[in-house]
Image (cartoon, rainbow, N blue to C red):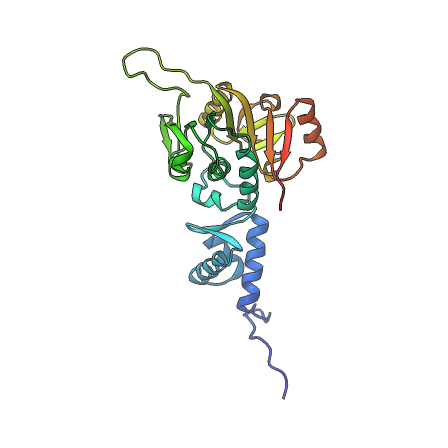
Length: 277
């Protein structure tokens, strides 16, 4: 008796088995970066429900990140409107390495200013041994992430709320209790997560209001540490935050490309690369 073969489709080609389809689907999402359920259903010629089940399973296996209406690859560059919870799962290991290294710059009793971002939240999670910190931030997520015994005072800047980023966008200052000029602040260290780092464009991000706020945060600190995983190197986004020389440190998970490394050295930026161990 002849060996059985998989049933064919209308063109006579063998139909892909489910395990093979899911492997191809995972590979495609990783290559493209971000796709919708409808796009995947059309590409793999299966129903929307089948794709949803496949994505749910691949997400549970840690192969990709399931989003509302689609999926993103683990190493994809997030779009500006990508939600914070999704971005927290992208380059997660690199962000934790960066967070652990950056936390070592924070000393007891320091006043620090921290912008909203998934990488800065990783820093906050590693602030376990420090004490008596004063923290100013535009992150609405940070108060829930930081250990209470680390903080002396915690302030959140007011302004417009960006729900996708769980952040406020507004002036880097606080109103007085009585009428008058706003109270200005000065911090020891600014921890600023950026969207891209490029030799020519410097530090950039996707939102104009956030870029303005990040630049002012840098101006309010005696020392500036920029945080960026290596997927953000040699790229530029819509809004410029600052030139390379504005930072004292660039904290990352892998060495920059030769051209970017030269530009950082010429700008007198100390590059700190996290250990993978």
